[in-house]
Length: 323
Image 1 (cartoon, helix red, strand yellow):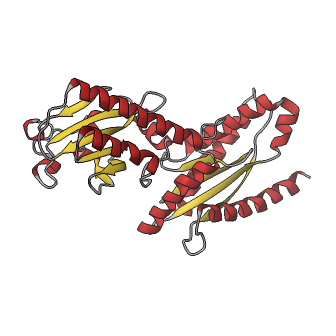
Image 2 (spheres, helix red, strand yellow):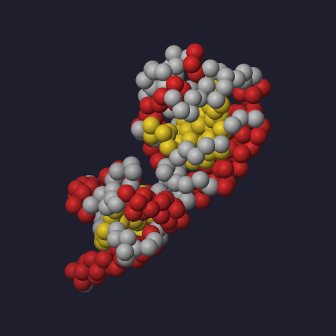
């Protein structure tokens, strides 16, 4: 079996994959209807929509088998995302890349594969719409064109999902995005007994920036603040703007101790920014955090509420210190 090559734009591609907010999330009817259609149109036993992450392929929708994820190292789709073209393997046993693949030589004994890349808005190949069969098949030029058309429709649906859960100004997740992705992240933490921490960060006296420098400058400051948050925390963390000047970070699989380092780096970034001679005003913020406790936090909203309380206590101390 040939090891899968890594795309040249892998860092940007992984950022785009995780920015969808769909990694590890359950199936949705809005995507399932396309895999059902693909299964019928091509008379295939299996049709899937996948997202190719760093070491796993996450199955967002599957018809014909119960598949939720697969190691990237054995996934056909890891090869599909190397090109913009439809990839077809008519008989995997005769293809040197897959002849000794565990999915071919063992159960479920796949023989045929056809996959079309799915693109993020920046052009990154984030996943595939693919078809699988247990027997060799012929896939015509017309079939390839039809699969691409259907993949572009899936792509448009994924973009629509992304737009509905993204803050337009900063590019971070919005409140709905935090709820959708965060709920799934907490479910995984609960299932595998992992830690999680939610940070609530609020800019201090931000109204003054808008009043003294105008809303355009205020928007620029929010984008700058959001960018520093995004740079400091892990790509697997959910970073969201949940209000005008309010931000949250859900660090799943992380303990409070593990969050100290990124918080210190973020504090240093803000201090470095404030020390620049060209800045018109300083930015300061209050923070609060709470560790996920399944017995106390039945939802992401419960975590946000408790972290908000901690942040408010911090903000009160800030207000008292400047008055």
